[in-house]
Image (cartoon, rainbow, N blue to C red; front, side, top):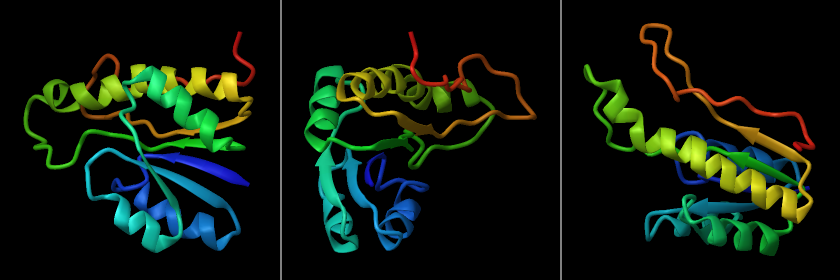
Length: 141
């Protein structure tokens, strides 16, 4: 299976590359920060630099990859400080989990991808709007 792994160099995405490849999947892994592609190549994945908020680039990357599945592990939490203001800390990640997820879902629909997995987060200690995202059953009308 061809797997488009968005966020393949992040805390969780990086831990998925090797198990996916070991199970015989072909991994197309996205990265955002220049220089992060070398590790993906070393692990056997095909790197693609991508800004998840650029809907045209997302569509083009997914169409070019022609994946059977998309796994969304993109966050903006690298180096984030988890203090009293989780809303401010999670704002960039929430944008990736709303607009970025919408871009990936739209690209999946255009490319005929029927499998989609997305990471989410919901804090038990704090109640925030927009921190969690519902994943729809496919096809979405």
